[in-house]
Amino acid sequence: MTTRQRYFTFLLVLLSIQSQARSILIPMDDKQTNHLKAYGIAYSVLKDENEVDWLLNYRGGSFLIKHTQATENECRVRGVYFEMLTDATTASVLQQIEAPDINMSAVKLVKAAKIVVYSPVKVSPAEFENTDAVLLVLTYAEIPYEIVYDEEILRGDLAKYDWLHLHHEDFTGQFGRNTRRMSVVDVKAQEAIARKFNFPKVSQMKLAVAKAIKAFCAGGRYLFAMCSAAETFDVALAADGVDIVESTYDGDGIDPAAQSKLDFSKTVAFENFTIDLDGGYRGMTFSDINAEGGGWGSDGPNSYFSLFQFSAKWDVIPTMLTQNHESSIREFMGQTNAFQKRTVKSSVLVMGEGKNSHRYLYGELGLGQWTFYGGHDPEGVRGGGGGFGNWRIPTDLNLHPHSPGYRLILNNVLFPSARKKKRKT
Image 1 (cartoon, rainbow, N blue to C red):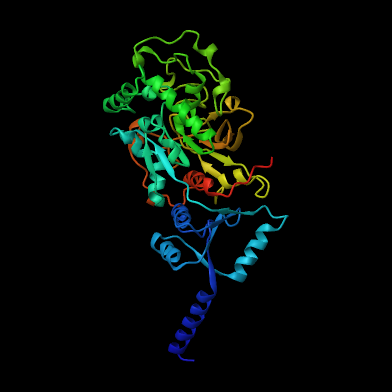
Image 2 (cartoon, rainbow, N blue to C red; image 1 turned 45 degrees about the horizontal axis):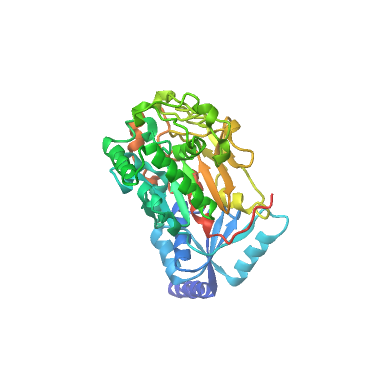
């Protein structure tokens, strides 16, 4: 057989295989060329009103999609590795996953969640928000989202959305307790919204916003919070009706009995914590929820936290939220680094923890669900010099397409799309 004949034979075989291919498998193991953009492919398929099978614990949490030329083209354009499967091969994979003695499961994703991010970039320059990990990864993965801030929430606009993200926000109304983090313009923008809605103080406005967000979640939606938002959200709710804001921020003093008046029945994730009334480390800490405030909450910048392994067939929700190609993730810092273990409510499910702290939490609230994730940016500054100002430098995710820390965020983005299955344990 000549070289020309062999070439044409190869083309015929290839065309035959492609003609039989009915599914696209996007593996999420080490063969994947861009883990983060793979989530964007899955979301785009859902947005086009098609379904996706999320193969839990199969090759790092792979996606199985009915083949279309459009999806195949998108994978190629976005640099996402995929494999073409025939009907017979697809059936074999699904049969393997459903075997009772294998810790795998297939979850059907049926609808693209409408994503919204709560961020001051809606109303002010908010330079610090340029490093919001969720804004960065949604943009990189090409997943569409909208932005709201206090005004939209107070107007009741959250009803339009399925999934809400909160990042390094201060729901106590103390502007992050750090002037390097928030500019005068940012502060004035928040004060203007408070006046518009007839709140005498920003702290009172922020409490109203926190209550609206809590009601949003309890009504059957999904809440995802990182960094100081996860901490200050519960601090604000516990201090409902109690002045915990020093005069620097609101013109009057703190209630001297504030600590004893906290109501932990109003919080979502934390209890029995002590509020920090003087700002503690560099004037930046809010409470002892934050593990080693200002430090790492672990053993330093070269330490790791571990993801727990769950039963894919029985504990479907935490299995979805912990899908990854790595089970140990390098720790990263933030204004709220991680969560003191003793402050986490017993009803909360811990999905990831370091040696001395919890990092990744899940819980249910009314009809809704939430996840709290400690730290600021999974691939951001890890100490060793550079200082606080370097946190303003956005991470270039082109350099981190396989980031396991960012994968946890995207697991949460896809989670509301799942056909609901109740956690059994």
